[in-house]
Length: 374
Figure: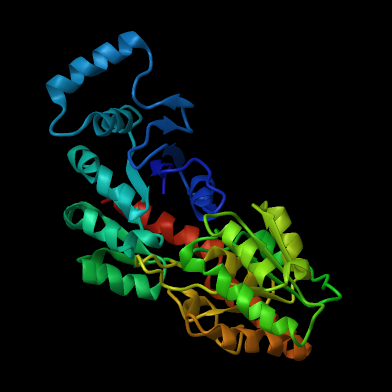
């Protein structure tokens, strides 16, 4: 494909939990205009400028132009339309269905192909789906492609109205650096998890399961990286359970710090569940990174996790809310170190062969090329 002008549109500039979006920004083939700031973007990382004009004179001209040619768009949408037209954008990649729902009219008016990349909550949360019901329906009809990242999500998107010919399954891939991690195993059992402290990741179940492990292995350690509204509750729970000396909450971790923990980890642990509001994972990147690092994964049969973790071969999965079974899996990993190492190596092989970043980006480049070339 000749170098195409692509707009990647995302609500955030660089959210620490959205490494997959940064990969799109940095690795897609073409000239990428990264636009961000809200569901309708107002900043450009490419031009380093605001999309709506900031200078007073330009604002006046913009308002006049808007009154004459708005075509039913609101002002943020109209400003985006002017930007896409000015920079001759040939394809738009909307990160999250909620972003696509706000900009499909803009792309439709410009006849610019729109690809909408769903990631998790945007295909599962009850209020999001209800609020965007009509917009999703129109977006599905006008978008060129809709991307899902798990088999569960693919079925959900079909139910919501996406036709088979537009639906693309394309799970993320970990950064290649995770395949290069060399094990420097901790002397004591070390369980590690990283991600936002939110309802769908249920960190309290991880803590309860770990407290059961400590009854048999009182020197075991647990580190849970990240931030979120359940962090303080999790810290308090560790104190209530009397395990605070065995648990660390290191906060937001850089990729380098994550890799350092993975090099020492006995296993990666995450008890994902479907939250009461419907929120679900897509396919958790942290789990992919851990498996790429040859660390066995202990998690749940939830969303895209069973797509990438093969139960009893590359990790151990339990049903959602079953913290007793999770504790049993943690104990098994401690007590079967040779099999655990083999499980980790099998995970690395599985991710490298089936879910690499190269495969993920290659698929995106392929559908962008199809979209641009008609």
